[in-house]
Image (cartoon, rainbow, N blue to C red; front, side):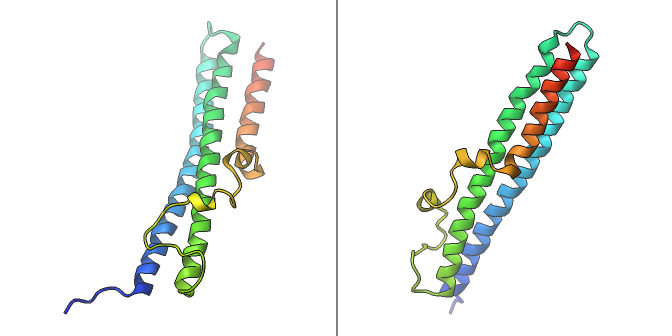
Length: 147
C-alpha cells in the first residue's frame, strides 16, 4: 500500500510553491535595484575618466535607470498578483468549501489582474519610484554641473 498525500498536504505544498514564487519576485526586485545603482555608477566612472567624452555621455545612464525602474515595478506587480493567489489558496486550504476554487498547483494569476494595482500604477508607488528618481536627479544635476 502506498502512502498518497492527503488533500490538505497537497494544498500545503501548493502554498509552499506559491510562496517560493513570491520570494523569488522579491529577490529579483532587490537585485534590479542593486544593478541600477551599479550600472549608473559605472557610467559615471566612464564619463568622468574620459577627457574627450562629450558632455552628454552621462545621460546614457538614464536608459538603464528607466529600464531597471520598469523591471522593478514588474517584479513588485507580479509579487502582488502571487500574494493574491496565495491568499485565496490559503483560504481554500483552510476551508475546502471557500470560493474561489483554487485548483491544486495552479499558478495562474489572471483572475487577480482586476483586483491588484496595475503595473503602470505600480511604477509610481513611492517604494518603486524612490531609487530611480534619485538616480535621475543625480544624473541631471551632474550633467548640468559638468556643462
